[in-house]
Length: 337
Image (cartoon, rainbow, N blue to C red; front, side, top):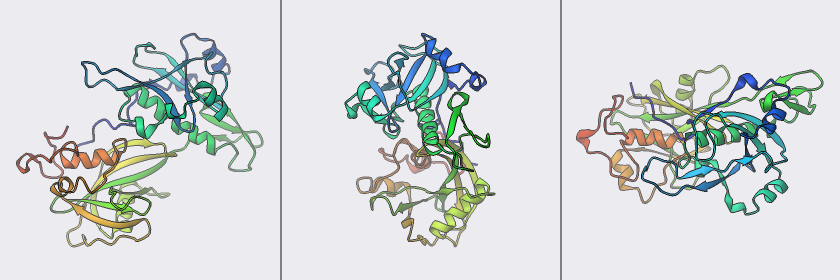
């Protein structure tokens, strides 16, 4: 069995979402009156951060969220109670309540007119600490949900926000609408030579390669989805799909479920579907290193990056571990960071 993946950039969090208090009728009045409360402004999926000077601890985050007092952010399209922090920062103690404020263009411009200062989650994911990564991921996901659920899916009536921003209600039929997440599997397919299968998507640059992935269909298990997606996109038949790990991917509303599966010998002839996947290749670790200047691999914020890195045995910008130090596929390794 392959070992589980370690901490994934968007799966980290140090926030108590405090669901028990969302139903309080005066929740936001109470929070806005509390001196300790901080506001996280979000504009077009982007937040404000500040760089942290390099210190002796190389593991410390290099970027930190800029949170504001309640009197500094006075208007919002939508407010959501994100919860209370579980760890302290230089400016906020543990237990700090945090409110998300989704801003209009005008409000964002008033708060910070330099658009370059607003930065997105993909860019920030690997530079933030656990608390801030969790807050931003939660914020982007719930803001995307609100933007797409302003009306009742049954009758089209505008909905009202309740439960601290975690539920919308229809005035007509009293229908309660809660946030939903779309599960998608992403699969590390290995052949009998322990090579990894990567594909090039029609929407990407010609030299970008990543794992095969797709949404889980209605009434389908993760394992069945993994086998189906691989077969549809590559023609490869796989067996023994196993779970590796998961992380949210709020672009706009997914969670990526990492899997590993083995290609059935004799079914490894590659047949890209020609629509979504234009090219397919089996890569060895040495191939990845030899072609490092010519191919683009998944970005560091993605689960695909960590799944490939885990198979590779270490950072993708370094040579692969010597053959003698690599464990066979499916066995725990001591060389992986």
